[in-house]
Image (cartoon, rainbow, N blue to C red; front, side, top):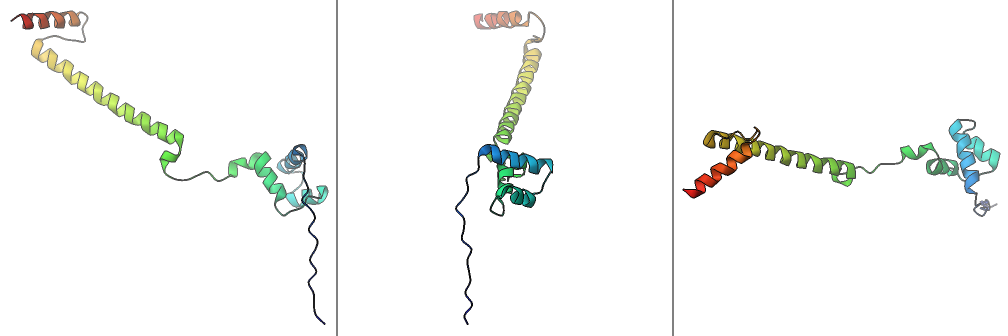
Length: 131
């Protein structure tokens, strides 16, 4: 005698409402029943249907894969890098301005950090041009 394999008929896919899916997810998340118990209780087919719903509608979204790669793929990291670059440029400018102030103070005797120093600088420039 030959042994014939009998295949079970696959039932057509069942469409569940969004409210139903969310209710099942709530029960799972609250710990009332595990996924296998929920499948039996509600007659849900498929091995991972409840788990897929939990990922989509429940707290399991945080466990989804986060793209890992170069820091530039992350907009926050890219923004931080740009801000760090701007900060370095600003620090360089401040250092250059401080050196400039020191040079003016040494050569012309004008302290730009004091009040009225701009007037002294303008008057010294006029007197230098006139010579």
